[in-house]
Length: 179
Length: 156
Image (cartoon, rainbow over all chains, first blue to last red; front, side):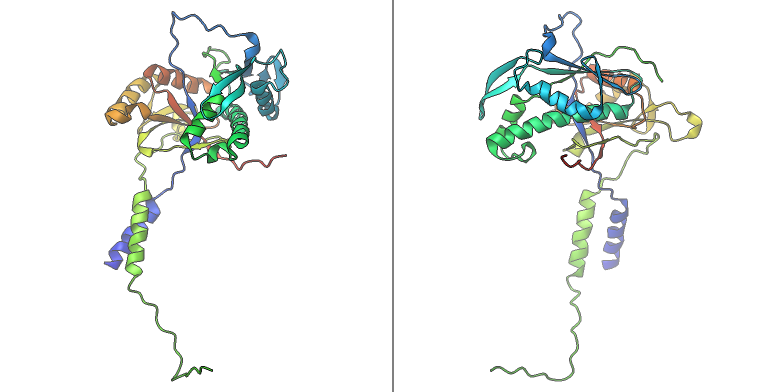
């Protein structure tokens, strides 16, 4: 009896691999409607992030380093000084939070076919980090804990509503080649 | 004052092994429950990129995987290929793959299927973009870019 259970134990010990499947979760938009008009979005509300086939970054027409991207995105999404070149600020009312100051900013991400997946994930990671930090700040301010540590589902929903994942990926174009 | 008598020679009593089988059984059940026997053999090399802002995939049973990377067999060249289930596939096979994954789940869970993209870090985005477009057309909107955990950099 003990032998058999030992045997089974060693078998499961060896075959088990505690898979820690983790990653960056995203929601894809539905396929574009060919008849729909493109939404009218003001120029100041869009942060254009381009990644070319040599993995270089271009933000609003300027080449920048990936390490600057997070702060750039945070500044863009909050517009702390009401800069007329940064997105429009609006006050919205969210359940459990009351009035929150947000912006209409959207980050538009575009990559070439030749961009490496590693670089793409790094860019996504930095942008996610920016949003997570903003959420943490708001959560800390209102509820006293980090966003990830919120136990009340209604609270985390409120934070998600106040700071949405405002990342939009441009419709792909065949540029940049295979290499 | 109490006195303690010491009678005879001192010998340590043997450990009671009666409960050992219970402990072993507990271990056994633990490993049986957490084990996921891998049902796919990877035909492509996948070393996911590192990222710090990761979320864990919640329900294992609601995740379907798409692997993209260079073939393991050198004879198949170095161009990145897509693997669905146990075989190589092309971009055109993704819609039927998504449909099959949907059909194998319960009616109530169909809308919660997450597609996990396990993509090698050296892959070019072209093939990934094609896969994403197909997923959009197939209606599988929830995706997860699989990454390796990176130790969070200290605030500086």
